[in-house]
Image (cartoon, rainbow, N blue to C red; front, side, top):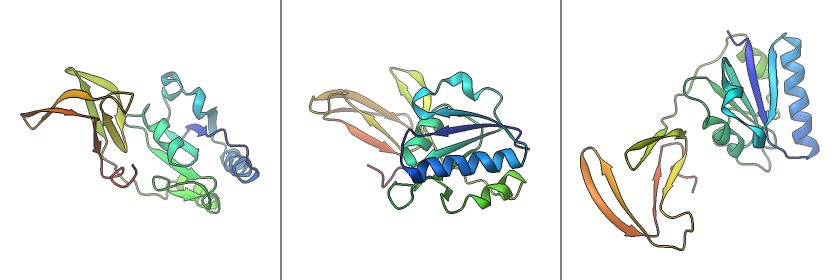
Length: 173
């Protein structure tokens, strides 16, 4: 089932976060699961080749960053500091690590989250957005001119930008 696991963790240095990482790695080792462990800031697409499961440890930001590299691979988000960190996209928190054993043994269900595919000037960008996409200038105080095409309807805009949200990101911004 899940034989090759990529563990992506945030660079937080709090005691609780580091303990959560240790506890998750202990569970993986106890079940003889092979894992590659990488900081979220060091991610590259090559790390995701031939991976059966991605586990993120941190909060929503870590989950979202890792999701940009994934098309089909299941991702399990674990919030390492639920009292402090946002975890709307995570499935477990630091107090529920024992459930990870059940998941790795096949006792789970999958929640499908729609993601937005973005085209810029007719070219599909490589990443899918799990939460929202800002359409506009990277300097938010600048005015942007852009055309939005949706269901064969085209509309020209001049504004500071728009946000296009998925259901998962509808309350995030």
